[in-house]
Length: 147
Length: 476
Image (cartoon, rainbow over all chains, first blue to last red; front, side, top):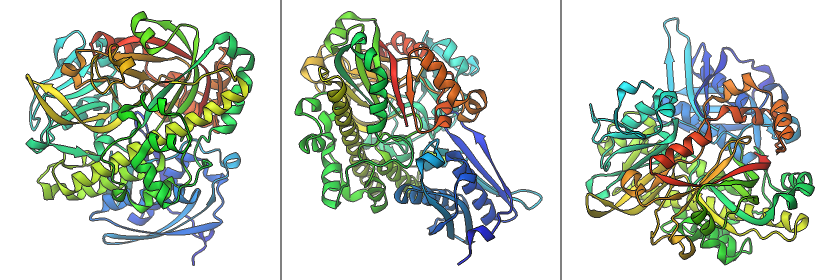
């Protein structure tokens, strides 16, 4: 098993505005890394990432007919793990093979007094959903999450 | 938005004539001021909805409309199953049957003020709010199924309320046609610990004062008097509803080409009402509606217990309970004939007019109470359905103030502590697990709820009855 602490993410993330909710966007040298960055962006909607310790992990598997639905599925799988397991995550390792995604996410159970979660993400929408590679070869993955 | 995009049919009615793939016009009800400030996305999303198969009359947007997912928030559209009409998981959205419940207390401001802080603290202690909070109720498989079939009726049978509550809830507390078997194991798992929780985001529980009455006769029928205290609860179907939305959004998006449906936006993922997946979704969505009704019923029980300890004289009877994210089969008169249509309301409230057979007898002459949640600092309203709203919007009205500013922008504009202190200075006590969450929901991030309500009133969608202002707000 790979230790989440020893796999620093490459790339960057940002939020973009939506009237009622929040857009999450990840950039990375590969599609998988852009997915990892967007997951960080989603976690940062909820809490300050620095307060989350990568103490335990869950494995995630998704399948979808195209990159964009696969990306929404990935975020929704994390939303499910957060809700069902009362977890927050701060480190991710994603592998994409065609229409399949296998991942590991590291984090810890929610501690309301320490994490002070600002909102709960209800789901990743298909609004402003985009997975693409730009001219320089960098990958982008983005969508709006419903909070 | 640019007013030149519209044909102005009356002072409060703005039409987008059919063009391109639109099957019907789109109509926005708003004042000139509101429509000028409205997001351009409302135009695009209303146009998109108007292209869906089987849509009847028009795609409507309410005065609080803003950029949503697929549908605008504040969107209303009715579909005829016999004309290829669709049901859209995206159109209903993730927070299925999110809604508002209003309770009388029988108390006055003078009764409340001496214990306002104690009440705020105890409500905050007893009402699970915010991400990561859990309720005290655990449902095994059998009880989960009973809850998803029985809704608020199930909750009352388990002791969380009284039978009289059910008369004051849409569908009399129990949505018929629910199919718990169509709800995924993941959705049920997400709900296991979430019964009786408020959630987060724009969800809240407020203690409010009736500060003005705009229609004495209807207010009387609703039991609302100036100076009286009420409780308003805004929340939905929690994790179960969110997962049902997620599951069927994907399935409908993938299945759309099989039904020869061209989606202008994937978020409008839909399926014919008369299709396997369409029927499956309706059964799951109705189960999620029951989950929301049961959840608001359990929260009501928690609130009653807090009042019983602090203000035992209080009697918390329901004014009404409305859901504003749904798709419901309803009979509507269209061009002189009655048709059974599937009406989607996404961030829009049903507003049946006087005499509607679904209204309980004490409310029938007045029309359906329409509960409009405002923001923490401004106020909320109670409206009543009108005789003309069926013709105008399939008996629908607005649902809230609507955001004027993104969360991002709100965070750059205000601090949570600052918002809490300012409101405390005005006599409004806020309790929340997250200062950042409070900043994102700052009153200034919302449109002027009075302007929205006035537009709904002037457009004839619903009649303004009473204004309510908060004294305590528990923010998820």
